[in-house]
Image (cartoon, rainbow, N blue to C red; front, side, top):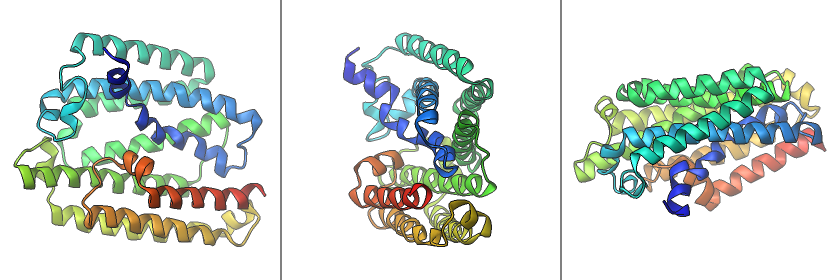
Length: 289
């Protein structure tokens, strides 16, 4: 088991999604020296639990992954890491995660347990059903927000839950679109849930969700509650970056047909990174300047 294979197995690059844990404190204006360390510890604990989930998923999906042009290179699917070793590593990561989570906060511990149980049933059963599969994925982001809220002791607004859920649904649909393109171009069905989708359906729903996300975000920035909490009437300016980010994602999906990994898009696509950083900087300035 090489270090590179181990790195791929635990999918460290996917930990970027756990950055949602920091959002409640960020928007709640409590992201400071007193909250950063507990949040970082919680981020690591949740990430270890997520890695345990990824390993279990790769074990179950190994045969299907061998049909995918990129996933066939995953350590378990390619045979570089044995199933027994993978199970052992997943168990160690999960125990370390839940032990740390319990010591940090019992509600956070409950969130980590719920996340693992949800994804366990998703992996062995629920991912076979169209729409249910992307809904479960989206719930995972709500759990991340809840986890961050309990660590930072910050209440989470309904706006944040709504927009996180819609955004996660859009990104999950992008992954299903990639699966459909593989089926169309290579004749390989990489997951059973694809039977409940087609490109027209995914395209229509993606455009619909994109429109709802932009409108919901604009309404959020114009709400009296948000303006009063932020202390600035210019929160709506950040809508520009959300609009550009959604447009870029649709361009990647519908023009370049590249939405198989939303995480890699964030890490490697320069326009997307620029938009996200501009949004964070602008909102951060309004909140903390």
